[in-house]
Picture (cartoon, helix red, strand yellow):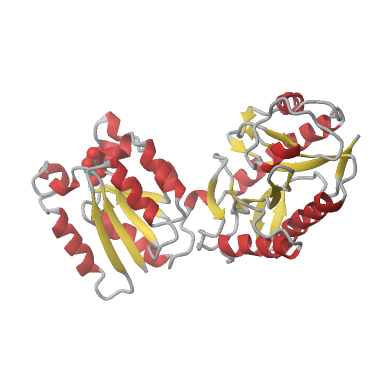
Length: 379
Ligand SMILES: O=C1C[C@@](O)(C(=O)O)C[C@@H](O)[C@@H]1O
């Protein structure tokens, strides 16, 4: 295992800097202590310190798809305000444990909050140089498996998400009864969002996506004045927030029965979805799940037509770990809540996506939604 020991601003001043709080060892001495403590174990270290936010962002990015298995990160004062570093941590699949020499919870008011903790697997604070040691031990004990505490949901969270999904399902059925060819994407979005709120949503997990025709070829399509027209697919990606948890669903509806390439793309998407939903199990990596969906889509002749990852974790945040993408080497565990959302997108023509959100149990993937996987066609 290879770990990056990453230190942020002013930690190069350890030894000199407020020794009553941070101790009298220099950073080089702490790094030696780490090396010595683990010299007989199967772990190597890279050490990096910077006083510059951008350099730290880039260092974190560089661990993505690299030989680094984890980061032990003391962000220094960035802990309390740097959303850029929090986003950097969220951007990579590398698991990160945040550490602090001092106990930040018992110090100044502004130090009590970490904006970075949210994106990390855990936080260890107040053990001096042993905060680093403890974090490394956690990595070693888990042997590279998912440490992602937040990605493992409690049974209560699973139940809440099922309730959230019921609201989303009801809203979809209500919307479906009203959608017709000739409406604009914005009109469809409006009907769906009103139905979500009427059924108990506290808000939306993300801006609802409604994309028709060529606009649907953008996985993040923004609803506009495009009109639903015969022969088109309409991608509708939506989610409710309920008791603080986010649901996430996508259905593609068709204006008139699809034919030719559009029908083939639909069959490829459905097959990719159902293959992974059937085969995914505890212990598979996010990459394996993603690759399996790509295999199926390629077999239908749509190689290169899915520009995004297969799915992601969902919970209090709409994008949580684990990420079902080529960069996720971590293994899935029981009570991960994940989305499976393959799609086929042909630029200038159409897009298709089929997404369910569900929980990973000992018996495999249990989808939360009751919305059909069959063709949904409107006139
Ligand atoms: O620079 C640091 C060091 C620190 O991260 C620690 O290790 O205790 C705590 C931070 O509040 C402070 O800004």
